[in-house]
Image (cartoon, rainbow, N blue to C red; front, top):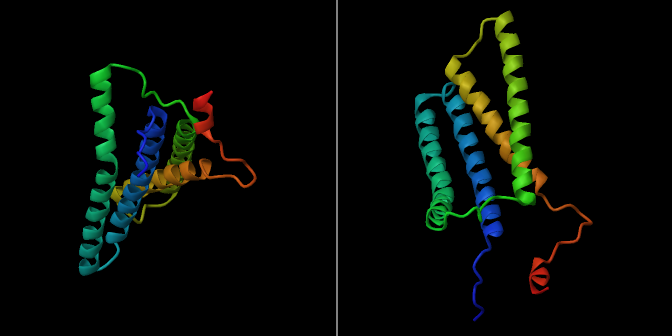
Length: 163
């Protein structure tokens, strides 16, 4: 039986960032569902609400254990060993920047529209829709940036550790 090697700190942080991106996408779906709940019948809205609670719990379960391990490691070691400095961390930052830019543009357009005509929806719906768009764009952008590109060779970091 092969022994399972522990993750390096870089691998751990990459895995944490990927899980966070998945959790962020799940939360964006919850927020979009909250907007939809305003426009559907009560029985369907109740079902959607139950679904959003389940998705939110899945998001927490997905991230919380690894997040707690990160905090415990930092408390015990007082080290900067877990500072993310990798391809995945760069993609995470780029996705956050793109998401912020899209959110800013969306809010500016929403403001222009609201100044010309009365809004057919409440502020709560506008906020939830904006957050949903921003979070979904962040997570999808992140996964787009880290996708494997055809023709690129996969790095074998195991051989580098032997050198």
